[in-house]
Length: 114
Length: 111
Image: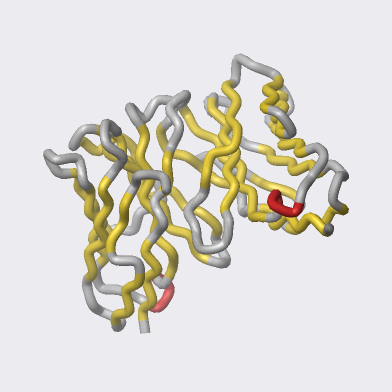
């Protein structure tokens, strides 16, 4: 158990809908990362937050947005869902987001868009 | 942006043999290179990492080497065991931001 929690574990929805994925980082970790893992594209970095502020942005679509709240939990919002958005979404956390701080991954949320 | 390539995509070895996975990266600014192991149904777990000011790092049966000039780094697992079977990912990062992952290597250790 990494100490990172993600809810829900599974999510099934229809095209065009909007969903919210939630992540609680390990106690004491200030940095949160979001990743998308699909069969054909591997692990794709989406976005990083540090202590409530966006720190780095990767291959995140405009239909996706995220935020980190004062209690450090983070939410990833996916809207106007398409079939291709079906994937595993992972959240990871680290102490400060520096290169020598280990990232701890949560168990993931499996999103299925029908 | 950064591009990380990983080879091979699948690897089968006999128990006790060594396994080597290789990655290349494109952005010379990348300075942190972690390796992750992902077991079925779980999130990736860090197994070893190396920073750009170090050429080699070892932790028991696992070692990582980095060649900054050639922009490649490798994972070496010696005396493989069945529990080493998993998917392994390499990654490159600039100072802990924007991690770019390889496409993964599925390692099978045959008892």
